[in-house]
Length: 441
Ligand SMILES: NC(=O)c1ccc[n+]([C@@H]2O[C@H](COP(=O)([O-])OP(=O)(O)OC[C@H]3O[C@@H](n4cnc5c(N)ncnc54)[C@H](O)[C@@H]3O)[C@@H](O)[C@H]2O)c1
Ligand SMILES: O=c1ccn([C@@H]2O[C@H](COP(=O)(O)OP(=O)(O)O[C@H]3O[C@H](CO)[C@@H](O)[C@H](O)[C@H]3O)[C@@H](O)[C@H]2O)c(=O)[nH]1
Image (tube, rainbow, N blue to C red; front, side, top):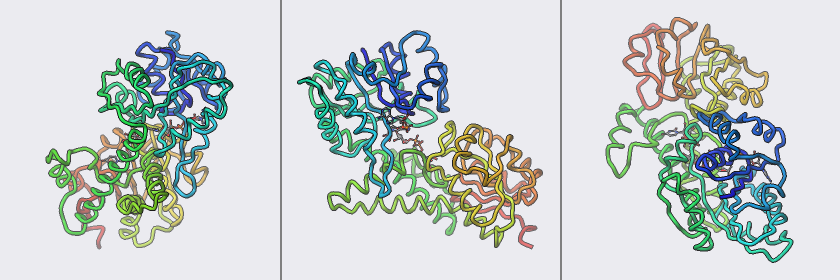
């Protein structure tokens, strides 16, 4: 099939590469010229395991092209997939300006009947109706087109795997023919397909993200209670997860959820409910708990040291999760900002996210070239992302390198047994702190 994707961000790029690799002919359009130039050379502007080799292969096989020209992208397409960003506005609601401008451009370029316009971007319930209007307003003739909502569920860091091995594909189309065509497009992925109305498809995306965020805030609250009452959150989560009605996933306590989706989509759903005078109290609490959790490690450090002013801290991990260079809404950035506000000199390290972090943190911190640069001679060490290369470090190595070995582990990378065998004062999440008697004197 001839498929066009509008937006060469995370979703557009991964979707495009995967569709091309199962033999569709894919054009990806973006308005960002530099990005398109890089992509034409087979260079991925994002770090995503497995993406670049697959991209290069599709270019070599002539299954994929990149452009900034809407006419070239849209006039022959059977299916046009909208994958532009839908960031948060100041009030938390979804900014649909990129969707609107892309829809208007598509409308102006439609020159035949039967094109299916698919929304993959995460958009509030009712947006597809608006998209229809925006396209219709720009049509140059009486062309018929179909609309569908086909939300994306990939996770950064495992995006290729999630596309080929996802749990479900949701299709909400305005006609049976469009629904059948989209099912055919996805068939090579061999993932179960659910057909719904457009509105249900739009809501499935928000409800899924909100539910997962709720699981995370819930387990983080249980972790906070464990810290005060006793109990080990790892055992508690394991025991809860053994109940098949609860399930073992998304019960990893930590320093809160970040990324480009959960924070944005939970806020957008609260706003969407508010628009119809429904106060979504549960989700409001989930968001509040998450904000509190993001600064919980620094609170522990303050309690440990008294004042943090004039001290030196290393921060390991800047991306919002491992295997990505994305730092959008990452807890690490909140931690760094708070440390800086308290007069701490901060050295950060991340295997792939340093360049992105530099654009946000500028010269306010030092950047380690090697992870040891963030450990050596520091008074305290924060672990904000559970990168594999941090997990294979040993606490006794960390203890030797640090000035005052106090570790604040936001991702429970080390066992309490290991912490007990070293000179490190070790704080983690939802587990008892391991404080050495010498540090209490
Ligand atoms: N990132 C994820 O893991 C993920 C997963 C599922 C769903 N989503 C949703 O998918 C959508 C896209 O997310 P993303 O992370 O890929 O966004 P992104 O910000 O990484 O990329 C969006 C791209 O769209 C381009 N763009 C903006 N306006 C355009 C226009 N008028 N015409 C053409 N291109 C335009 C931008 O230049 C950018 O390259 C969002 O709604 C997001 O919520 C994201
Ligand atoms: O048990 C857990 C699981 C995750 N997280 C945190 O939650 C955030 C999000 O993680 P994850 O969901 O793995 O990454 P995303 O790439 O943001 O993916 C989410 O957001 C995407 C965009 O909407 C959806 O497509 C995916 O299905 C959904 O999982 C990260 O900060 C994680 O550290 C936890 O703290 N504990």
